Length: 191
Image 1: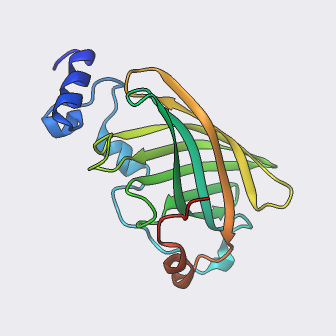
Image 2: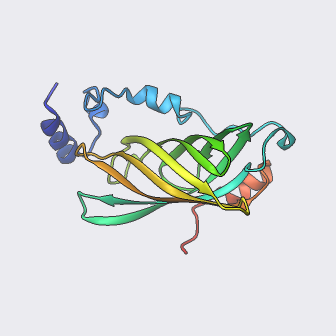
Image 3: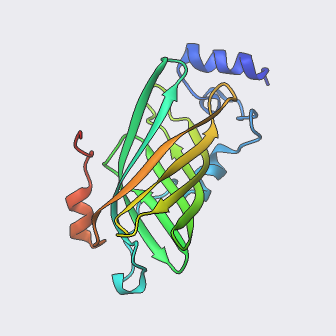
């Protein structure tokens, strides 16, 4: 197993994540397959049971987060349409499959207006990060209307630095039916 800095160099030169090159991702002791399975990103998006069994934050939301790419010296915004299903205090969130080239999962809990949890993203396999899996923590505040959540994320970057940035979720459809999923299963339009 190469040292971390050499593994990063191999990934950069060959344009593939360590796992695709035959090396385990040892940088954080993270198992890529387990991270994807734990986040539910190793299987297709499942439609929910009848909507009456879910809480008031259930719906289709526009997720937008900002991040800085140290390799490109530039800031970017990641946007996804996501389905949130609320069961009690738990919010299960998954990106709709055709809303971005990356897959996003959030597992959060609600305590009053405060929402706290974790996020996992598998990046675009053909994009800059070559299918890398990133994950971290998130904390949001729900606005009184219940239609918008704002807060921050934190997570490790490619060079072992801690990154963070703003994250918002905005309700765009309170339905999670097959029709609603199909209506929003596309890339979000530019602002």
